[in-house]
Image 1 (cartoon, helix red, strand yellow):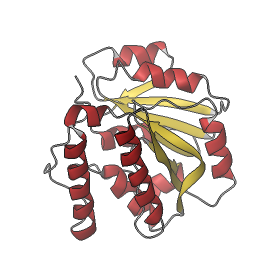
Image 2 (tube, helix red, strand yellow):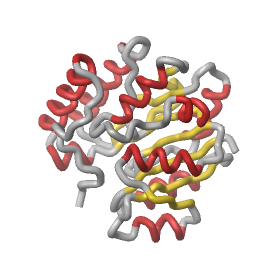
Image 3 (cartoon, helix red, strand yellow):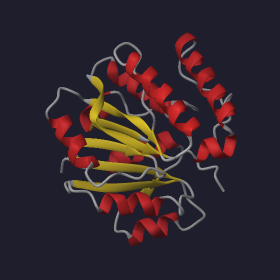
Length: 233
């Protein structure tokens, strides 16, 4: 099997069906799906089970991704957030680009699932920053990270002690020994629900502060940013 898709969840009954439906329509088929669920109190597990995907126990996003990776059989791991939705040719284009490259870890630029101009501008700025820092300070969001399974194992997976920006810490550690890059053939559609819930200015300030912490101090091991997994009820 070429690809194992790992989705950490916590009370995602509203978003998971759309992602699973988009995966069922993929033109590329050599993959398995693993949902790592943090003991959801809604119908998330039932939905995953009815869709025929494998369900393992999760925890925090980092714990869920690690638990999913332990159960994975694929040569490549793809970590997705539950609130993404993929175009039908996404996996075909992405895997084609990966297998023709020297990359061992990769991510995608962001395409907001929103028609609002402010969201296009914000995500455009993030994409520009990601591309400009790609070679010396690599970034990735949890919405889309590809990693070879052996590379994931070589760094011990995600650091479960990290409380915020664990995906950033993950690709930074991998990039020290593995080739990292952004895929050019695809972008990942991302939800703006956190922006809607917490406010665009507040989220922007939080992520700028987190970036400063990563640059000048290092990984974020405390709950100073008060991140809550699945806090969208």
